[in-house]
Image: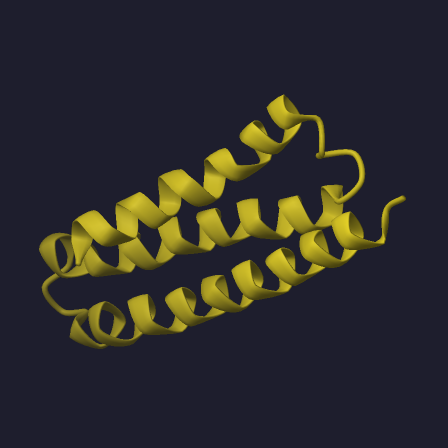
Length: 92
């Protein structure tokens, strides 16, 4: 699970970089920023997975933190991807 979450973090944070490289960042910048924000939320979810290693008295944080912020990150990716798809489909 740890490697998968870190892969989501890296991919989500690199999406705006590749969009700028491809020249499509300007049309759908807000959607790409949502996807980058999801990368930050995935990083936060991953940090809650590591909480149990640092603080032994926080099992509830280690249990619910990754699910909560992973879900919020997934929603950000979904909204951002839909925004990008809409903007790119509507350009002439």
